[in-house]
Length: 184
Length: 184
Image 1 (cartoon, rainbow over the protein chains, first blue to last red):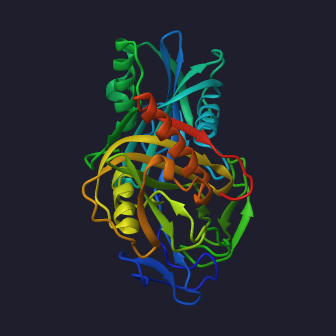
Image 2: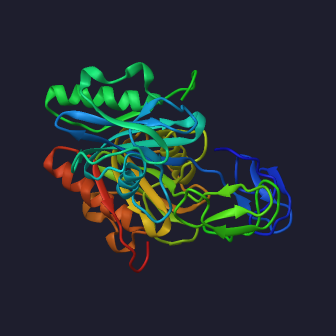
């Protein structure tokens, strides 16, 4: 996810790490063309696909967290909206088509430079299947959720809030920040 | 905002534009080390600073939209949360300290690969002033908002929704997508 910033994307010259004029933090600045290479957080977009009260989860076929369960989600791409990204990832990871509802949660994960967004959604049918990045896809009723085998803390937070809201009969928007600790 | 992707950041070799194995869209792939350079949307984070019913706006000293008015906002940085970014930008652009409330709106601007987030907020005091990227900062009551001189459509959308919610006595979370047309 992170890589070494050594050379300028534009002209291929070496980069310096220094504070540009008028700025306050060090940036990767090209020694030749002067271009400043900013690094910005990435959005991870996904959804909470529901079918007759059950939730569709995917068991990851790739690192990090291979073998653990997650909501369908992935990096937002250029040229799409957050909602389009969430639907694309659901199709890619679970071969599933969803009708998207409101944005349900935003989780900041600043130590890995990510912001996670999850949408409420309803599966259109049960023709889901593992995509290339998943080992398995399955529906789980609330008591069956594999809480100890969830891949990411943002997914745990999101599902807990989702079930709490559903029990209360009222869905609201949730915002959380995750601090660094063991794992994601 | 956009620059040419010609060389690998990691090893300095030329990049090819091709579809990597297992992918479905063309990426910038290093001819030498094989690294794939993904391009992802950027988050713009800001807030709606209120003081006794008035809203703090900044007149832009920089392009794009130099001379036009905007809410304090800017690119989210690595290592911070969306809320921290919104407060930092408000301090940088308007030298203003705010107490942040709930996230108020998310606006997708897919044709420029951006997602804009605005938080509700209250100014802590009226000691605001133009930062280096602003020509002027001022408080506006609703009837005084310079609607025809606002810099960005996401700011217009956000302020309209804000005043509508305030009039209704109930703030909700808003999500919108902006399609390409003249301007931002």
